[in-house]
Amino acid sequence: MAQVFVSHRGLDAAPAERLAEDLRAAGHDVWLDTWKINVGDSIVEKMNEGLTSAEYVVLCLSAAGVDAPWIQREWAPTVARWLEGHRVRVLPAVFGGGGEPPAIIADLKVADFTVDWPAALAKLLAAIN
Image 1 (cartoon, rainbow, N blue to C red):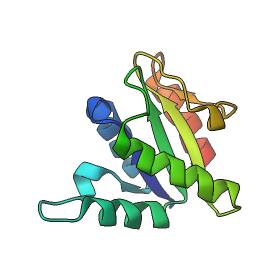
Image 2: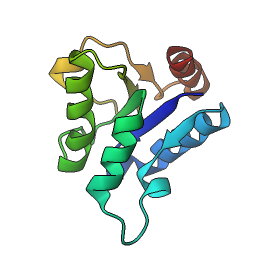
Image 3: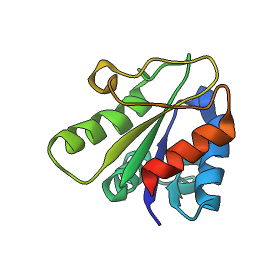
Image 4: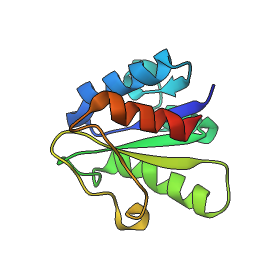
């Protein structure tokens, strides 16, 4: 069982939750903002807890992009930790409408959920296991 953090924009909440449910059904411990942050919680503190324990950060990409402040606070530090040799991997997942990964991770193969969700999920799970 892996610790998986699902990073997404608010506009991608529905497919991100579907993906998180699929990952949880496969036996992984999944961090998703709507599951882990309650009213009154410090958003930054909860995000930090999730990112610190994550072995994998699934970066959800779509036409909405990844340049919003909250999602940048999730993927950018993860990439920095990865480049410093920490045991964490960024796994790009493309949702409807496409989406380009940030330049620093543009060379990473993506799991493309736009055409065949089950096939993309299988590829993502293979990368996690």
